[in-house]
Length: 349
Image (cartoon, rainbow, N blue to C red; front, side, top):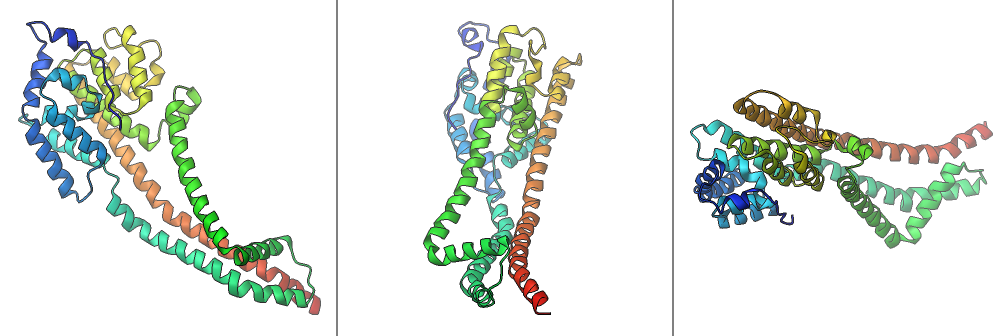
């Protein structure tokens, strides 16, 4: 992930003698950044999951960050603000929860995914083995028999025999075609994500992508960063800029940047529909700072839980889908081969 710079109003304040209190709070938190890095590394090690490149870059950037001004000017560190501020506080419960969330949303659970996809992968390999076996062994027998009886073959049977002949005659081409098909599906899926992020300002695209896993994780980072910024008294414009950078989504970064000139109090400007209704309700509520901070942290947990649950459901739906596809293909082959036999038996009787 490329580093993004967040222009904040603290640059001019840092030159004055009376630094804002939130800068002092952030300086105190940065004093324990090396211990925090060790804790994060230990958390990833205990989770038995590989540390993503994004986290490694954030850790390296955090080690080199020695002032609150440099921290606030680096968009790459914005998502680490909640765990940084809660690390040295007397209440460890919030820190443990934030650290668990940080590890959960920044890992792809590769080991679990390998174990999960083992069974569908075995079924898929078995499916291709059956397809190639029937193309080389079963199909020629049926094709010769149907030609001997001079049967009028249904279109589905003709199509199956054409596929089998193509596989026998162009085996390497068939393998390359299957590989290209899988690669095309993967690339097309990634292109959909890029297209959705680029054109999310369109209301239709935004409506279609509101509940995606990427948006849910982005809003988790957004709400948690905004809560941490509000807790130490960072001005709303700067807090929203940090939250937009923490989301790691260009749509939310641009949205917060466009709102800054029109900010007044807790208003979200003239186009609040860019943000979820739950976030608007929290920001527009008249409760105190402590209650608002707690509500934002709870909101970030809601987005996190929804993202992780959606991911588990997506994985759980993959195995039945693979089985259904395999069953449909085998059923198609069986029916297309036996349709001419049914016509033959009927004519003989």
